Length: 526
Ligand SMILES: Nc1ncnc2c1ncn2[C@@H]1O[C@H](COP(=O)(O)OP(=O)(O)OP(=O)(O)O)[C@@H](O)[C@H]1O
Ligand SMILES: [Mg+2]
Image 1: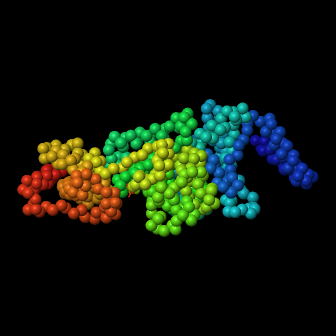
Image 2 (image 1 turned 45 degrees about the horizontal axis):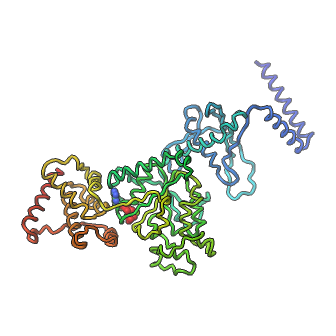
């Protein structure tokens, strides 16, 4: 054993001597050329090829590095005895990683792959726009030369896909906003994000169950439709236009969609976007598997005035709603024609959702909402642009039943007894005529959620009062004007007034009936 150590030491000594001799005898240029040559010779005869994936690519973070790190973390935990642990911002899960200069093998389509995590000290920093970390990190991928063409592209795509899945699973959903008005953050990102924790789901959404199911099916088909979109040559995106009076659940529906699909939301504030090119940049910085939302598309920006440089004074009165009749969809828009490059136009917006740029990235959903579909330009409604137009209506009876279940834990299907059924009939009859929004109904239920009996009784009273008011104002039409609805939503019923319970004002029969219903409601929810 002693002899072995002696011989190893003497070999090392000889090598060190040769190296110092090389350094003394040969100039650095020659040494470098010799090493390069030896390196080439080695790679020529080696059966393997190597790919370096560095953490920082120039000054930008290399997304592939992050993806590989996440991908390896999915199976490294079972393999390694020494691992690095990390937890990302907004993440609820711990990620395992390879320790410095450790390696792990993987197989893909029967091909063996070796990954090595290489960490070296960075040389003294030359000039850089931003400080770089002291350590240089990277992964080296080793595969057999003959497998290179066979798997490299598909393997890297597979890694990116898996990494995105892991990221989504680990991370709470994110809600992005462009409220910084075009300025970029330190990583060059125009979007700001916060964790998205909206509790709305399709289960809690009050709307007709058949329509709800149709939307869920559509979303599911979209999310699993990669091959369909590829086969048909369509960009993998889908547009939904949600329209209806305020408080009917448009925003709640968007949150439910995001929670259902596990997508992030990009809430695009059009008033913060100054030009079509800025809009394009924002789009380019959105990730796939996301929902891009423009709320109140009819009011968020005065496209017509911004279109014509001298065409409007931009007064707040004008800014509130645009006049679609003054929009001109011919040509590329004024940004290109009129030289007003700092404007956002309808054509820019349409290109955003529909043009070539809309296909950068994939699996994205565009959702526009409006209270006034009739004010939208037909170009926005054209088929193929917004694939599905979803009307969010006043509270229907099936929707009311969902709200009763959500807020009071009350299953209408389980109602029995003659009086109980009578109340259900009353509710059914009066709900449509009342034309109340789910938001208004929710208010009544929230206020009385501690006392089911009182909640149902008050709801019935409010519905009846609304129905009566509607029949008077519309001569039996039953649906009130939009403006009135908006006002009603703004009023936000702090305390819903009860209709007069003073029976002297009414005839005896109706008074008796009212009393009976009150009692029935009491029995029903006992
Ligand atoms: N269909 C619904 N199902 C369940 N809750 C609803 C529904 N519609 C409204 N709500 C309740 O009313 C509140 C307001 O609803 P939401 O913001 O989704 O309405 P909206 O249609 O987006 O209104 P606006 O047009 O003013 O933006 C929600 O927080 C939710 O609690
Ligand atoms: Mg809304």
